[in-house]
Image 1 (cartoon, one colour):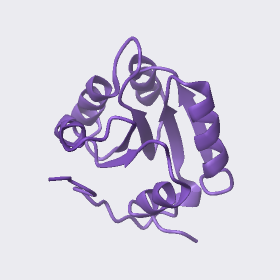
Image 2 (cartoon, helix red, strand yellow):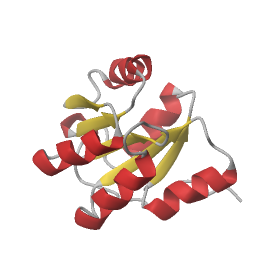
Image 3 (cartoon, helix red, strand yellow):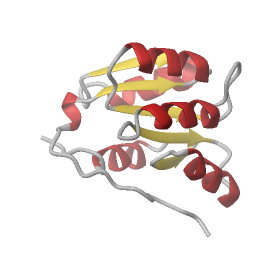
Length: 136
C-alpha cells in the first residue's frame, strides 16, 4: 500500500514566497532541482547531508525542505526526525530513488509530509509543492 500525500498543509502563502532547502548530496540532482524551482520559489539553498540540513534549518527559516533519504554523515530520515521534533509545522518532502512501499512508509514514519520518487518529474514536483502553498 503506497501512502501518497499523507498530510496536507493548505497554506495561504504563495509558493513564490517559499524559501526552500534542498538536502541532496549529489550536486547534479541539486542543480536540476534548483533549475526546476527557478522563478517558482523565492530562494533555494543547498545542504549536502542531513546534519548540514539540520544545522541550516536551526540557523535559518525555511518554508519547505526537499530531503534526500540516502546521504552521508546523517541520512534524511534521521534529519527529518530531528527537524520535525523541533519544527513540527516545517514541510519536509522526501525525495528518493528508493521508492518501494516500505521505503515510502519509512519516510512518513520519520515525519515527512510527502514523498517524490526519483528521477524527479517536474510536474509531480510542482504539484506536490503546490499542495502546501498556492500559485499566484
